[in-house]
Amino acid sequence: MYFSSDDLVKLDIIDYASAINEIDPNIEPGDIEYGDDYVNADYFRQGSCQLFAYALSTLDDHYQVRKIGADSKDGFHVFCMYDGYYIDVRGATCDFSEFSKGLLFQYSTDRSVPYIFEENDFAGRSDIGIAFAKALIYSDPKRYLFKL
Image (cartoon, rainbow, N blue to C red; front, top):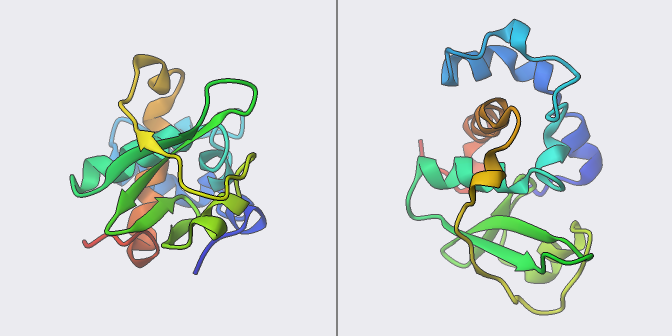
């Protein structure tokens, strides 16, 4: 029930265009092009993880937004926690080792800290990214422990 990077690449934004438009009527299906940052769901694993965490946290305030890693060369990852589960675009797991495997960096223990979103988290076409993230969540709510 946990997506790999290869699985995420197959979740193409064009396939979600009508769902994105339902979530945000200001985004027309024609606005979504491959030139955008959010070509597929793997962009939420590395590079736009904060938008997926933001989308999930706005749907239910029980999700705690966390960050692991430093703002240095190792980078960082923003995700949500809920009831002992680590949740990002790949799904939910209570096994930190499994969670850490799909990141650019790996830790043996959870060193995450609470994360507060910053203005630069929403640069570019973040409206499309947030709507895409919500479309992914709505399409498979059990994967993200989300209750419709």
